[in-house]
Length: 94
Image (tube, rainbow, N blue to C red):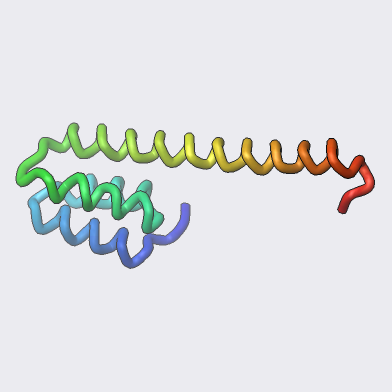
């Protein structure tokens, strides 16, 4: 796994301040270890003052699912762009 970013550490500290168990804070921030995913969780938590642990885990899984779909979309777009180049220029492109 990637090391935590500064924003992931901000998320960790926010969760600790709100009284979530350390192992949950660690689990969430190790999985949401990019600025994009950590920022989404911080935004989610900012709308609520007291969420049960299960709600936090559910949101973490939703964020990870969204991220994976975005990655798939980008990969598909890159593949489609490559196919379009082949159609336009043939197989001799670099």
